[in-house]
Image 1 (tube, rainbow over the protein chains, first blue to last red):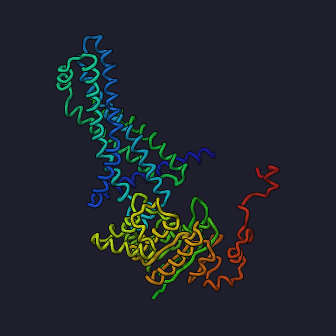
Image 2 (image 1 turned 180 degrees about the vertical axis):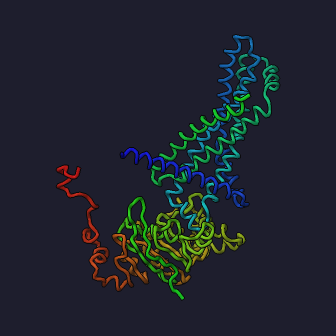
Image 3 (image 1 turned 45 degrees about the horizontal axis):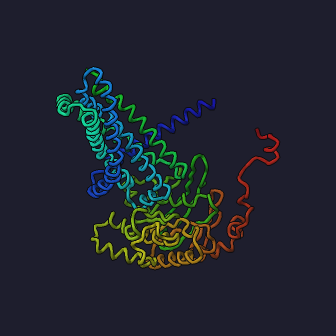
Length: 258
Length: 267
Protein backbone atom coordinates (compact mmCIF):
# COMPACT_ATOMS: atom_id res chain seq x y z
CA UNK A 1 0.00 0.00 0.00
CA UNK A 2 2.99 2.29 0.49
CA UNK A 3 3.38 2.92 -3.22
CA UNK A 4 -0.19 4.23 -3.38
CA UNK A 5 0.60 6.63 -0.54
CA UNK A 6 3.83 7.69 -2.28
CA UNK A 7 2.02 8.14 -5.59
CA UNK A 8 -0.64 10.29 -3.92
CA UNK A 9 1.93 12.34 -2.04
CA UNK A 10 4.05 12.88 -5.18
CA UNK A 11 1.02 13.85 -7.27
CA UNK A 12 -0.12 16.27 -4.59
CA UNK A 13 3.39 17.73 -4.38
CA UNK A 14 3.52 18.26 -8.17
CA UNK A 15 0.04 19.79 -8.29
CA UNK A 16 0.91 22.16 -5.43
CA UNK A 17 4.13 23.07 -7.30
CA UNK A 18 2.19 23.86 -10.49
CA UNK A 19 -0.26 25.92 -8.42
CA UNK A 20 2.61 27.89 -6.87
CA UNK A 21 4.13 28.44 -10.31
CA UNK A 22 0.82 29.82 -11.63
CA UNK A 23 0.46 32.08 -8.58
CA UNK A 24 3.99 33.38 -9.10
CA UNK A 25 3.37 34.08 -12.81
CA UNK A 26 0.04 35.78 -12.13
CA UNK A 27 1.51 37.87 -9.32
CA UNK A 28 4.44 38.90 -11.50
CA UNK A 29 2.30 39.82 -14.51
CA UNK A 30 -0.10 41.85 -12.37
CA UNK A 31 2.86 43.59 -10.76
CA UNK A 32 4.22 44.94 -14.05
CA UNK A 33 2.36 48.21 -14.58
CA UNK A 34 4.62 50.26 -12.32
CA UNK A 35 6.89 52.95 -13.68
CA UNK A 36 9.81 51.92 -11.45
CA UNK A 37 9.87 48.49 -13.14
CA UNK A 38 10.63 49.85 -16.59
CA UNK A 39 14.29 50.59 -15.89
CA UNK A 40 14.66 47.20 -14.18
CA UNK A 41 13.11 45.51 -17.23
CA UNK A 42 15.46 47.35 -19.61
CA UNK A 43 18.43 46.20 -17.51
CA UNK A 44 17.19 42.61 -17.71
CA UNK A 45 16.62 42.88 -21.47
CA UNK A 46 20.31 43.76 -21.68
CA UNK A 47 21.27 40.79 -19.45
CA UNK A 48 19.12 38.10 -21.09
CA UNK A 49 18.88 39.60 -24.58
CA UNK A 50 21.94 41.61 -25.54
CA UNK A 51 24.33 39.30 -23.72
CA UNK A 52 22.83 36.30 -25.59
CA UNK A 53 23.38 37.95 -28.99
CA UNK A 54 26.78 36.41 -29.69
CA UNK A 55 25.70 32.78 -29.23
CA UNK A 56 22.47 33.44 -31.16
CA UNK A 57 24.24 35.10 -34.10
CA UNK A 58 27.03 32.52 -34.36
CA UNK A 59 24.54 29.63 -34.09
CA UNK A 60 22.22 31.23 -36.66
CA UNK A 61 25.11 31.72 -39.09
CA UNK A 62 26.31 28.13 -38.87
CA UNK A 63 22.83 26.61 -38.99
CA UNK A 64 22.02 28.66 -42.11
CA UNK A 65 25.31 27.58 -43.69
CA UNK A 66 24.75 23.90 -42.90
CA UNK A 67 21.17 24.04 -44.20
CA UNK A 68 22.32 25.58 -47.46
CA UNK A 69 25.01 22.93 -47.83
CA UNK A 70 22.65 20.04 -47.11
CA UNK A 71 19.78 21.57 -49.11
CA UNK A 72 21.97 22.20 -52.14
CA UNK A 73 23.20 18.59 -52.31
CA UNK A 74 19.58 17.36 -52.38
CA UNK A 75 18.03 20.06 -54.57
CA UNK A 76 20.76 20.02 -57.20
CA UNK A 77 19.85 16.41 -58.01
CA UNK A 78 16.45 17.62 -59.19
CA UNK A 79 17.78 20.77 -60.79
CA UNK A 80 15.91 22.73 -58.15
CA UNK A 81 18.81 24.50 -56.47
CA UNK A 82 17.05 27.79 -57.19
CA UNK A 83 14.62 26.85 -54.40
CA UNK A 84 17.44 26.96 -51.85
CA UNK A 85 16.39 30.44 -50.71
CA UNK A 86 12.81 29.52 -49.71
CA UNK A 87 13.97 26.24 -48.20
CA UNK A 88 16.46 27.96 -45.90
CA UNK A 89 14.21 30.91 -45.06
CA UNK A 90 11.01 28.91 -44.40
CA UNK A 91 12.85 26.37 -42.23
CA UNK A 92 14.39 29.18 -40.21
CA UNK A 93 11.36 31.45 -39.89
CA UNK A 94 8.83 28.72 -39.15
CA UNK A 95 10.85 26.27 -37.06
CA UNK A 96 14.55 26.57 -36.45
CA UNK A 97 14.59 30.27 -35.60
CA UNK A 98 12.07 30.12 -32.74
CA UNK A 99 12.99 26.60 -31.55
CA UNK A 100 16.79 26.79 -31.58
CA UNK A 101 16.70 30.31 -30.15
CA UNK A 102 14.48 29.07 -27.30
CA UNK A 103 16.80 26.10 -26.65
CA UNK A 104 19.88 28.34 -26.67
CA UNK A 105 18.06 30.90 -24.52
CA UNK A 106 17.19 28.18 -22.00
CA UNK A 107 20.84 27.11 -21.82
CA UNK A 108 22.38 30.58 -21.81
CA UNK A 109 19.89 32.89 -20.05
CA UNK A 110 17.43 30.45 -18.41
CA UNK A 111 20.08 28.62 -16.42
CA UNK A 112 21.61 31.96 -15.37
CA UNK A 113 18.20 33.22 -14.20
CA UNK A 114 17.62 30.08 -12.13
CA UNK A 115 21.07 30.23 -10.55
CA UNK A 116 20.78 33.96 -9.84
CA UNK A 117 17.37 33.74 -8.16
CA UNK A 118 18.28 30.50 -6.37
CA UNK A 119 21.38 32.17 -4.94
CA UNK A 120 19.36 35.23 -3.95
CA UNK A 121 17.12 32.84 -2.04
CA UNK A 122 20.04 30.97 -0.46
CA UNK A 123 21.69 34.22 0.67
CA UNK A 124 18.37 35.47 2.11
CA UNK A 125 18.19 38.40 -0.33
CA UNK A 126 14.61 37.47 -1.29
CA UNK A 127 13.63 37.25 2.38
CA UNK A 128 15.27 40.58 3.09
CA UNK A 129 13.29 42.15 0.23
CA UNK A 130 10.08 40.83 1.76
CA UNK A 131 11.07 42.15 5.19
CA UNK A 132 11.84 45.55 3.64
CA UNK A 133 8.24 45.54 2.37
CA UNK A 134 9.39 45.15 -1.23
CA UNK A 135 7.54 42.41 -3.11
CA UNK A 136 10.10 40.12 -4.83
CA UNK A 137 7.48 39.26 -7.44
CA UNK A 138 7.41 42.90 -8.50
CA UNK A 139 11.10 43.71 -7.99
CA UNK A 140 12.78 40.50 -9.14
CA UNK A 141 10.37 38.22 -11.02
CA UNK A 142 8.26 40.60 -13.14
CA UNK A 143 11.14 42.46 -14.86
CA UNK A 144 12.82 39.16 -15.76
CA UNK A 145 9.66 37.60 -17.22
CA UNK A 146 8.90 40.69 -19.31
CA UNK A 147 12.53 40.94 -20.41
CA UNK A 148 12.39 37.33 -21.65
CA UNK A 149 9.11 37.93 -23.50
CA UNK A 150 10.49 41.05 -25.19
CA UNK A 151 13.99 39.75 -25.92
CA UNK A 152 13.35 36.25 -27.26
CA UNK A 153 11.25 37.12 -30.35
CA UNK A 154 13.89 39.69 -31.30
CA UNK A 155 16.65 37.13 -30.84
CA UNK A 156 14.68 34.62 -32.96
CA UNK A 157 14.31 37.15 -35.79
CA UNK A 158 18.03 37.96 -35.61
CA UNK A 159 18.79 34.24 -35.63
CA UNK A 160 16.67 33.72 -38.76
CA UNK A 161 18.09 36.78 -40.54
CA UNK A 162 21.70 35.74 -39.88
CA UNK A 163 20.81 32.16 -40.89
CA UNK A 164 19.43 33.37 -44.22
CA UNK A 165 22.63 35.35 -44.77
CA UNK A 166 24.64 32.25 -43.84
CA UNK A 167 22.63 30.26 -46.41
CA UNK A 168 23.38 32.94 -49.01
CA UNK A 169 27.08 32.81 -48.16
CA UNK A 170 27.30 29.06 -48.77
CA UNK A 171 24.63 28.64 -51.48
CA UNK A 172 25.36 31.70 -53.60
CA UNK A 173 28.93 32.74 -52.85
CA UNK A 174 30.42 29.27 -52.52
CA UNK A 175 28.21 26.80 -54.44
CA UNK A 176 27.18 29.17 -57.22
CA UNK A 177 23.40 29.33 -56.87
CA UNK A 178 22.05 32.37 -58.67
CA UNK A 179 21.76 35.27 -56.28
CA UNK A 180 18.65 36.66 -57.98
CA UNK A 181 16.74 33.39 -57.70
CA UNK A 182 17.88 32.94 -54.06
CA UNK A 183 16.29 36.25 -53.05
CA UNK A 184 13.40 36.53 -55.51
CA UNK A 185 11.94 33.04 -54.98
CA UNK A 186 12.33 33.58 -51.22
CA UNK A 187 10.46 36.86 -51.54
CA UNK A 188 7.70 35.25 -53.57
CA UNK A 189 7.32 32.25 -51.26
CA UNK A 190 7.63 33.64 -47.73
CA UNK A 191 4.34 35.05 -46.44
CA UNK A 192 4.24 37.69 -43.74
CA UNK A 193 1.28 36.31 -41.76
CA UNK A 194 1.80 32.62 -42.24
CA UNK A 195 5.56 32.45 -41.83
CA UNK A 196 6.98 35.52 -40.11
CA UNK A 197 4.13 36.30 -37.72
CA UNK A 198 3.57 32.66 -36.81
CA UNK A 199 7.29 32.36 -36.04
CA UNK A 200 7.08 35.40 -33.79
CA UNK A 201 4.00 33.99 -32.02
CA UNK A 202 5.86 30.73 -31.43
CA UNK A 203 8.78 32.66 -30.06
CA UNK A 204 6.60 34.63 -27.64
CA UNK A 205 5.02 31.39 -26.34
CA UNK A 206 8.46 29.80 -25.90
CA UNK A 207 9.70 32.96 -24.17
CA UNK A 208 6.89 32.85 -21.61
CA UNK A 209 7.40 29.15 -20.93
CA UNK A 210 11.22 29.18 -20.73
CA UNK A 211 11.42 32.32 -18.59
CA UNK A 212 8.61 31.12 -16.34
CA UNK A 213 10.26 27.72 -15.77
CA UNK A 214 13.67 29.33 -15.20
CA UNK A 215 12.44 31.85 -12.67
CA UNK A 216 10.12 29.47 -10.84
CA UNK A 217 12.83 26.83 -10.53
CA UNK A 218 15.13 29.44 -8.97
CA UNK A 219 12.40 30.81 -6.74
CA UNK A 220 11.39 27.34 -5.59
CA UNK A 221 14.93 25.89 -5.31
CA UNK A 222 16.09 24.25 -2.12
CA UNK A 223 18.54 26.92 -0.87
CA UNK A 224 21.64 24.71 -0.85
CA UNK A 225 24.38 24.19 -3.42
CA UNK A 226 22.84 20.85 -4.45
CA UNK A 227 19.37 22.39 -4.62
CA UNK A 228 20.48 25.22 -6.90
CA UNK A 229 22.50 22.85 -9.07
CA UNK A 230 19.44 20.58 -9.45
CA UNK A 231 17.15 23.53 -10.18
CA UNK A 232 19.51 24.79 -12.91
CA UNK A 233 19.62 21.37 -14.55
CA UNK A 234 15.83 21.05 -14.32
CA UNK A 235 15.41 24.45 -15.97
CA UNK A 236 17.39 23.41 -19.03
CA UNK A 237 15.80 19.96 -19.30
CA UNK A 238 12.19 21.03 -18.65
CA UNK A 239 12.45 24.12 -20.84
CA UNK A 240 13.90 22.14 -23.73
CA UNK A 241 11.20 19.47 -23.50
CA UNK A 242 8.47 22.07 -23.14
CA UNK A 243 9.75 23.99 -26.18
CA UNK A 244 9.93 20.88 -28.37
CA UNK A 245 6.50 19.64 -27.23
CA UNK A 246 4.87 23.03 -27.63
CA UNK A 247 6.49 23.45 -31.03
CA UNK A 248 4.65 20.39 -32.29
CA UNK A 249 1.33 21.64 -30.89
CA UNK A 250 1.81 25.14 -32.31
CA UNK A 251 2.95 23.82 -35.69
CA UNK A 252 -0.13 21.58 -35.85
CA UNK A 253 -2.36 24.54 -35.03
CA UNK A 254 -0.65 26.96 -37.42
CA UNK A 255 0.23 24.81 -40.38
CA UNK A 256 -1.32 21.39 -39.91
CA UNK A 257 -5.05 22.07 -40.33
CA UNK A 258 -6.16 23.19 -43.73
CA UNK B 1 -2.51 50.85 27.18
CA UNK B 2 -0.49 47.80 26.21
CA UNK B 3 3.25 48.35 26.60
CA UNK B 4 4.12 45.41 24.38
CA UNK B 5 4.84 46.05 20.71
CA UNK B 6 4.72 42.37 19.80
CA UNK B 7 2.56 39.72 21.48
CA UNK B 8 2.99 36.07 20.64
CA UNK B 9 -0.04 34.31 22.05
CA UNK B 10 -0.19 30.55 22.49
CA UNK B 11 1.28 29.71 19.10
CA UNK B 12 1.85 26.19 17.87
CA UNK B 13 3.94 25.74 14.75
CA UNK B 14 5.18 22.67 12.95
CA UNK B 15 7.16 22.14 9.76
CA UNK B 16 7.19 18.87 7.77
CA UNK B 17 5.38 17.13 10.63
CA UNK B 18 8.10 18.24 13.07
CA UNK B 19 6.73 20.23 15.97
CA UNK B 20 8.78 23.43 16.41
CA UNK B 21 6.68 25.32 18.99
CA UNK B 22 4.06 23.92 21.30
CA UNK B 23 1.74 26.57 22.75
CA UNK B 24 4.37 29.28 23.24
CA UNK B 25 3.63 32.82 24.47
CA UNK B 26 6.15 35.67 24.37
CA UNK B 27 5.73 39.40 24.95
CA UNK B 28 8.11 41.95 23.44
CA UNK B 29 7.99 45.25 25.37
CA UNK B 30 8.19 48.54 23.50
CA UNK B 31 11.57 50.28 23.36
CA UNK B 32 13.42 47.43 25.09
CA UNK B 33 15.91 44.79 24.00
CA UNK B 34 14.43 41.32 24.29
CA UNK B 35 16.69 38.34 23.77
CA UNK B 36 15.40 34.98 22.56
CA UNK B 37 17.98 32.31 23.26
CA UNK B 38 18.15 28.61 22.84
CA UNK B 39 20.22 25.78 21.40
CA UNK B 40 20.84 25.57 17.63
CA UNK B 41 17.99 24.14 15.61
CA UNK B 42 15.36 25.06 18.16
CA UNK B 43 13.61 27.43 15.73
CA UNK B 44 14.81 30.84 16.88
CA UNK B 45 14.99 32.24 13.34
CA UNK B 46 11.57 30.72 12.67
CA UNK B 47 10.22 32.90 15.47
CA UNK B 48 11.44 36.03 13.66
CA UNK B 49 9.90 34.83 10.40
CA UNK B 50 6.60 34.28 12.20
CA UNK B 51 6.71 37.82 13.60
CA UNK B 52 7.57 39.17 10.14
CA UNK B 53 4.64 37.30 8.62
CA UNK B 54 6.83 35.17 6.34
CA UNK B 55 5.39 32.10 8.08
CA UNK B 56 1.99 31.51 9.67
CA UNK B 57 1.45 29.64 12.93
CA UNK B 58 -0.76 26.53 12.98
CA UNK B 59 -2.54 27.87 16.06
CA UNK B 60 -2.44 31.01 18.16
CA UNK B 61 -1.92 34.63 17.19
CA UNK B 62 0.92 37.14 16.79
CA UNK B 63 0.15 40.82 17.08
CA UNK B 64 2.27 43.80 16.08
CA UNK B 65 1.08 47.12 17.57
CA UNK B 66 -2.20 45.38 18.38
CA UNK B 67 -2.82 44.07 14.84
CA UNK B 68 -2.86 40.37 14.07
CA UNK B 69 -0.03 39.50 11.68
CA UNK B 70 -1.29 36.06 10.47
CA UNK B 71 -4.71 37.40 9.52
CA UNK B 72 -3.39 40.34 7.48
CA UNK B 73 -3.83 40.34 3.71
CA UNK B 74 -0.76 40.70 1.49
CA UNK B 75 -0.90 44.47 1.02
CA UNK B 76 -1.55 45.21 4.71
CA UNK B 77 1.29 42.89 5.67
CA UNK B 78 3.70 44.68 3.32
CA UNK B 79 2.50 48.01 4.70
CA UNK B 80 3.09 46.78 8.28
CA UNK B 81 6.58 45.53 7.41
CA UNK B 82 7.65 49.12 6.73
CA UNK B 83 7.60 49.58 10.52
CA UNK B 84 9.85 46.56 11.14
CA UNK B 85 13.20 45.44 9.87
CA UNK B 86 15.40 42.43 10.19
CA UNK B 87 19.15 41.95 10.34
CA UNK B 88 19.75 38.58 8.70
CA UNK B 89 22.43 36.21 9.87
CA UNK B 90 24.20 36.43 6.50
CA UNK B 91 23.65 40.18 6.22
CA UNK B 92 21.70 39.50 3.00
CA UNK B 93 23.13 42.57 1.31
CA UNK B 94 22.28 42.89 -2.39
CA UNK B 95 25.48 41.75 -4.05
CA UNK B 96 25.03 43.80 -7.22
CA UNK B 97 24.79 47.10 -5.31
CA UNK B 98 27.32 49.17 -3.39
CA UNK B 99 26.97 49.60 0.38
CA UNK B 100 25.51 53.07 -0.26
CA UNK B 101 22.87 51.74 -2.66
CA UNK B 102 22.01 48.90 -0.25
CA UNK B 103 21.26 51.41 2.51
CA UNK B 104 19.45 53.74 0.10
CA UNK B 105 17.35 50.88 -1.30
CA UNK B 106 14.39 51.06 1.09
CA UNK B 107 14.40 54.87 1.02
CA UNK B 108 14.22 54.89 -2.78
CA UNK B 109 11.49 52.23 -2.77
CA UNK B 110 9.23 53.68 -0.10
CA UNK B 111 9.78 57.43 -0.04
CA UNK B 112 9.58 60.29 -2.52
CA UNK B 113 12.69 61.95 -1.09
CA UNK B 114 15.14 63.66 -3.45
CA UNK B 115 18.50 62.03 -4.12
CA UNK B 116 20.33 64.71 -2.13
CA UNK B 117 18.19 64.05 0.97
CA UNK B 118 18.61 60.29 0.50
CA UNK B 119 22.39 60.78 0.26
CA UNK B 120 22.42 62.73 3.54
CA UNK B 121 20.29 60.11 5.31
CA UNK B 122 22.39 57.22 4.01
CA UNK B 123 25.63 58.88 5.09
CA UNK B 124 24.16 59.50 8.56
CA UNK B 125 23.15 55.82 8.87
CA UNK B 126 26.56 54.68 7.65
CA UNK B 127 28.26 57.07 10.07
CA UNK B 128 26.24 55.51 12.91
CA UNK B 129 27.72 52.08 12.12
CA UNK B 130 31.18 53.45 11.31
CA UNK B 131 31.10 52.64 7.60
CA UNK B 132 30.75 56.06 5.95
CA UNK B 133 34.16 55.52 4.37
CA UNK B 134 33.04 52.19 2.89
CA UNK B 135 29.96 53.62 1.13
CA UNK B 136 31.17 52.86 -2.38
CA UNK B 137 32.48 49.36 -1.65
CA UNK B 138 30.65 46.28 -2.90
CA UNK B 139 29.44 43.69 -0.36
CA UNK B 140 32.06 41.24 -1.68
CA UNK B 141 34.77 43.69 -0.57
CA UNK B 142 33.57 43.79 3.06
CA UNK B 143 34.66 41.58 5.94
CA UNK B 144 31.99 39.56 7.77
CA UNK B 145 31.72 42.11 10.57
CA UNK B 146 31.55 45.05 8.16
CA UNK B 147 28.84 43.31 6.13
CA UNK B 148 26.81 42.82 9.31
CA UNK B 149 27.21 46.52 10.16
CA UNK B 150 26.27 47.59 6.61
CA UNK B 151 23.17 45.40 6.89
CA UNK B 152 22.42 47.08 10.22
CA UNK B 153 22.63 50.52 8.55
CA UNK B 154 20.19 49.25 5.92
CA UNK B 155 17.89 47.88 8.64
CA UNK B 156 17.61 51.29 10.32
CA UNK B 157 17.24 53.25 7.06
CA UNK B 158 13.48 53.74 7.46
CA UNK B 159 13.69 54.31 11.25
CA UNK B 160 11.64 51.20 12.08
CA UNK B 161 9.75 50.62 15.33
CA UNK B 162 11.08 47.07 15.58
CA UNK B 163 14.47 45.60 14.64
CA UNK B 164 14.90 41.85 14.67
CA UNK B 165 18.48 40.60 14.90
CA UNK B 166 19.02 37.05 13.67
CA UNK B 167 22.18 35.65 15.29
CA UNK B 168 24.02 38.99 15.03
CA UNK B 169 27.16 37.67 16.76
CA UNK B 170 27.50 34.36 14.91
CA UNK B 171 30.94 33.86 13.38
CA UNK B 172 32.27 37.26 14.50
CA UNK B 173 35.71 37.92 15.91
CA UNK B 174 35.82 39.45 19.43
CA UNK B 175 36.32 43.01 18.12
CA UNK B 176 33.43 42.79 15.64
CA UNK B 177 31.30 41.18 18.34
CA UNK B 178 32.07 44.02 20.74
CA UNK B 179 31.25 46.59 18.05
CA UNK B 180 27.90 44.90 17.32
CA UNK B 181 26.97 44.67 21.01
CA UNK B 182 27.74 48.37 21.40
CA UNK B 183 25.79 49.27 18.26
CA UNK B 184 22.68 47.30 19.25
CA UNK B 185 22.63 48.97 22.66
CA UNK B 186 23.37 52.44 21.23
CA UNK B 187 20.72 52.18 18.49
CA UNK B 188 18.15 50.92 20.97
CA UNK B 189 18.77 53.88 23.25
CA UNK B 190 19.19 56.55 20.56
CA UNK B 191 16.19 55.58 18.45
CA UNK B 192 14.02 54.13 21.25
CA UNK B 193 13.53 51.20 18.92
CA UNK B 194 12.20 47.84 20.09
CA UNK B 195 14.79 45.12 19.52
CA UNK B 196 14.55 41.35 19.42
CA UNK B 197 17.90 39.60 19.47
CA UNK B 198 17.87 35.94 18.59
CA UNK B 199 21.14 34.32 19.58
CA UNK B 200 22.91 31.60 21.49
CA UNK B 201 25.80 33.81 22.55
CA UNK B 202 24.87 33.90 26.23
CA UNK B 203 27.41 36.32 27.66
CA UNK B 204 27.10 39.00 24.98
CA UNK B 205 23.32 39.08 25.02
CA UNK B 206 22.89 38.98 28.79
CA UNK B 207 24.97 42.18 28.94
CA UNK B 208 22.57 44.16 26.78
CA UNK B 209 19.17 42.47 27.04
CA UNK B 210 16.42 43.99 29.18
CA UNK B 211 14.46 40.74 29.12
CA UNK B 212 15.37 37.21 28.12
CA UNK B 213 13.42 34.19 26.89
CA UNK B 214 15.06 30.78 26.63
CA UNK B 215 13.49 28.23 24.28
CA UNK B 216 14.07 24.49 24.29
CA UNK B 217 12.00 21.37 23.68
CA UNK B 218 9.31 23.36 21.82
CA UNK B 219 8.61 25.46 24.94
CA UNK B 220 9.73 28.57 26.76
CA UNK B 221 11.85 27.02 29.50
CA UNK B 222 12.69 30.25 31.25
CA UNK B 223 12.20 33.98 31.05
CA UNK B 224 13.05 37.05 33.07
CA UNK B 225 15.64 39.78 33.34
CA UNK B 226 19.26 38.82 32.77
CA UNK B 227 19.77 38.68 36.53
CA UNK B 228 16.72 36.44 37.08
CA UNK B 229 17.84 34.13 34.30
CA UNK B 230 21.34 33.80 35.78
CA UNK B 231 19.81 32.87 39.13
CA UNK B 232 17.24 30.47 37.69
CA UNK B 233 17.19 27.04 39.32
CA UNK B 234 15.72 25.33 36.28
CA UNK B 235 18.12 22.54 35.20
CA UNK B 236 17.25 23.28 31.56
CA UNK B 237 18.22 26.94 31.91
CA UNK B 238 21.39 26.09 33.82
CA UNK B 239 22.41 23.52 31.21
CA UNK B 240 22.06 26.17 28.50
CA UNK B 241 23.84 28.94 30.42
CA UNK B 242 26.72 26.69 31.48
CA UNK B 243 26.98 24.99 28.08
CA UNK B 244 26.72 21.42 29.41
CA UNK B 245 26.74 18.79 26.67
CA UNK B 246 24.11 16.54 28.20
CA UNK B 247 21.18 17.12 30.49
CA UNK B 248 17.51 17.85 30.08
CA UNK B 249 18.36 18.84 26.47
CA UNK B 250 19.78 15.48 25.44
CA UNK B 251 23.14 14.96 23.75
CA UNK B 252 21.73 12.12 21.63
CA UNK B 253 19.28 12.65 18.81
CA UNK B 254 16.26 10.36 19.49
CA UNK B 255 17.10 6.81 18.35
CA UNK B 256 16.30 3.19 19.27
CA UNK B 257 18.66 1.59 21.79
CA UNK B 258 22.15 0.82 20.51
CA UNK B 259 21.77 -2.86 21.47
CA UNK B 260 18.48 -3.20 19.59
CA UNK B 261 19.93 -1.52 16.49
CA UNK B 262 23.13 -3.60 16.42
CA UNK B 263 21.24 -6.85 16.95
CA UNK B 264 18.70 -5.87 14.33
CA UNK B 265 15.84 -6.09 16.83
CA UNK B 266 14.32 -2.86 15.60
CA UNK B 267 13.66 -4.23 12.10
